[in-house]
Structures are given as structure tokens and as C-alpha cells.
Image (cartoon, rainbow, N blue to C red; front, side, top):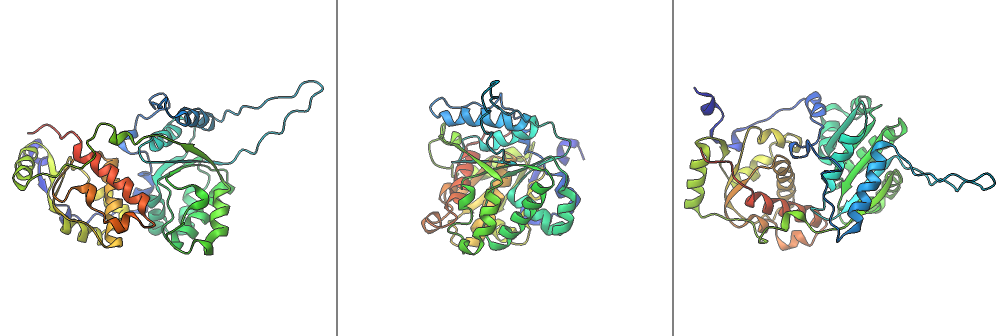
Length: 350
């Protein structure tokens, strides 16, 4: 078998049953490959939205520990220094560069122990290792970066508020991104009023930094995901698989399989794959299926995998009812990412 044969051909995601240990989950808490080289210098702020440059400057000071403090004169009392919170919270819409800035913090902070992961990866770590073991492993770390912070159920609320509280108490700095301000987390998803004390206690650890702007993923797109005909799909899959490893699965089969794999392992589902093939896309109406698909899309976007699809355009995969519900922001983020991946440049045909 040649090296090319070993790394090319068609694979089926539904045949994969990935496993990950707690140690593997912990060592995997680094920025996605597309942000390996993310820096503050490479962040291109939009002059039309001053909050982007303001956020960048503020986060550079946070990452390096620089504080602008005005000293009093000989006979003047120094102004009161505002409280410096242990965390920064980047609140803004889709595609304004929040993850790029979060990765820039990670790379710029001179920390011995630092971790970068999505919200679901941290909750998965707790699930794999247990709460106390997770605290013990993360205690003493200098920085915890949390991408796409979202509280979707009471269990996650209690776990993450307790976890972050203990880590902040041990000196860990926090940096997080979300499309929801920290004092509104959980709103519209469950009985948030029952957890207000925990939610507010957690938000007290963060300084919220608003970032406005236009979704960069949509700037060069026509607004709709690409839907191929069955014939074009077969031709493109065949051409790509001659020199690359490409997946090919029916949409319904993927949706069913995602229910059998923990979301923390979705990254292993797509390991080694250079393009995703999804046949016969339909609109989702089941909330649980939709949320699992969102988590899968996040991992595919992190890996920057082009998507080839037939059936319904992927930007129409979530029903209008879903888009009007409590998970609206998650679904809209997934649509933005699916649109970008359907337009992404394919690897050169073999």
C-alpha cells in the first residue's frame, strides 16, 4: 500500500467509534489549527467599528499584565484604581473575530500552564474525569480560555460556576467568548431564575468587552450554502478521494450516529478527513438532533473542512421555529459556519 493510498479514499463517519481518555482531552485543550498563528497583529479590525480596535488594545494589556494607572502628584491623591477582574468576556455577534482575539490572548500571555477549549470541551473533561479530578488538574493554571461560552442546562450551570469559582480562587485568569452577555447566560433556555445567584456570581469574575461588526464569513458569499446535484456530488467526491481522504455519509445517518457519540469525541470523528460529504440534507425539527449537529459543525469549522452536500441547502437545516427559540444564536452561528464551509476551497483533486 502506498502512502497516498493510506491517506486517500472515501471513509464513512458512521463507521467510526472514537474514544478519548481524560488525559487526551486535557492535552487537546489548545487553539484550533486555524488559529495556531493568531496574534493581535494579525487581527484586522474594521475601522467602521471602533469597538474592535478598542477591544484589541484592551486585551493586549490583559494578556501582558500591563495596567494603565495614573499616579497622583506630590500633593494630589492618586485616583482610585478600578478593580481589575480576573476575567475578560468578549461579547459580540458572529464572525467579528472573537475567537481570533481569544487565541491571541492564549499565545501572548507568558504563562507556564494555559488551556484553550470550547465550553463543551470543558464540560466533557468533567464528565470524563469527574469534577474533583478536573479541579485538581486545572488548579494552578495561569489561564483558561473558553470559546463559545453557553449555559444550556442547569447541570452545566452548576458545574461551570463551581469550577470557575475554584480556579479563580487559586489565581487562574479567565478569557471567554460568547454571543450572550454573562449576566444573561441561560436566559430563554431553562428556569434561569432558579440559578441567578450562581450566574451572577460567575459574571462578577468577568469584565465584559463588547465587539461590534459584520460577520466576516458572509462578506464574500452570496448568502446561501452550496447545494450540489447528486451527479455533481458523486463526481466531486470521486475526484477528491483519488488523492485525499474524504467522507461520504447520508445526512440522516450522521444525525443518528451523533446521538451515539459524546460531543467531546466529535473531533475524532473527522480526524484525518480533508473534506466532508453529506448526502440528502433535510431540515431538522428535533431540538436534540439539532444541538448535536451544531456541536459537530463547530468541530468541522475548527478543522476548516470543506463541505459538499446534496438536498436542502445547509443554511436551511434548522426550522423557523428553532430559529425563533432559546437556542437561536447557536443555530445562527452554525448557519454562518456551514455557509462558509460549503463555499470553502476544496483540496486539489487527486
